[in-house]
Length: 81
Image (cartoon, rainbow, N blue to C red; front, side, top):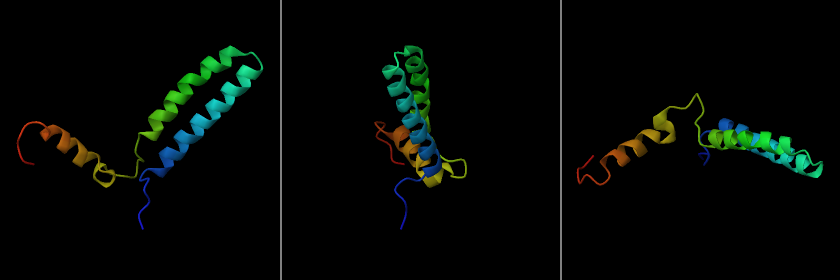
């Protein structure tokens, strides 16, 4: 049985980063420290980036990135792959 998430390590790191940033935002709002809220925004963006990244031990073919790129290259050209 294959896991639906192929890059679980980077996804876990990204989710942890987002949850930590959301916790900092909630704490900052409750203490009226809005500089903490502004500092957490890049952490959320970094977490989103990690959710879209692949693990270093996975090849592009294993996660399907190569097939998607080839399909996009031929999309709309009328040519066969």
